[in-house]
Amino acid sequence: MKLKEKCCLRNIPDADFSTIYFPVATKTLNEILDSLDFSKRLPIARQFYPSLKENKHVPGFSDDPMGELKISGSTGLDFVHKYQDRLLVIASNQCPVLCRFCTRKRITFTGERRRDFPFEKLSLYMQKHLQIKEVIFSGGDPFMLPDGEIRKFMDECARFSHIKKLRFHSRALTLIPERFDEKLFLLFRDFHVQNPEIAISVVIHVNHPLEIGRKSLEVIRQFRECSIAVLSQTVLLRRVNDSDVVLGELFTTLDRSGVQPYYLHQLDRVSGSVHFEVPLETGKAIMKKLISTLPERMIPLYVLDGHEGKKQIL
Ligand code: SF4
Image 1: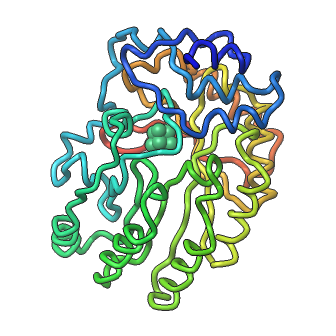
Image 2: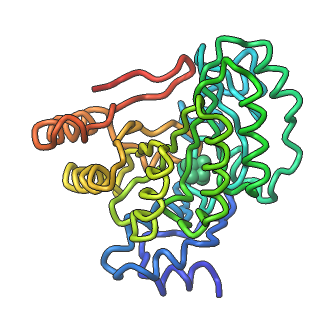
């Protein structure tokens, strides 16, 4: 079935089917959409279905909006050392879905799974940089890797006594919760027994309350049982979640599930994503409404990422 027919079947009228600029890879997307009522599908579908608007070239938007390829001491493809005490490792180039607004399209939209991560180079870098206290595994989604490779990353870090924290960024937890099986939790429990001094956290990427299903809640519960903190990050997206009602529901659901809402990101200005951008003033107004209605613990930091790091907007 062609993409256009699939969109019609799923009641996605505003997708205009561009595959010219970025390819489509929506392996699990249909299942997710089929689990929702027609009326509720649009905010989810818009994040993943391509649009002709992606072909629009707008000044200020680029393929590497965070300047990751230029940061000194980083390779931009393997790891990025932007903050003194944190090292961001691009552990995987794969995700369960392809977000059309992905900051690292240059990595995640490439198709084939990358299999040649330079572990030796990473070890050497960590060995030389004693100021690194936390290693963040991102990508892509590190949970798209086989268990053995996840453990290899963790063990490499545990060799260095200056590394005190490991953090995993994940979209898989909400979109393919079945990935988090007993074997994976055994791995985490075993690592904790061997390395009790290293704190682990998982930061889930979640943009809409409908993305959190029963199975995801169960995975969150299991992580917390393993003493692993679960936090969230959300991207503010036009016609997806740019309302205090939607975000209020999202942060309330997360809070009820034991997840700390951590960051609300202003969109990174990556090529092909201008139609997702919410003006800063609108974002601030939404945040002010949230601040006036929700308890402080449910309010994430509203931030803008840039070459120099994150700036808090509100
Ligand atoms: S989940 Fe994150 S890394 Fe993966 S495609 Fe979406 S924005 Fe990019």
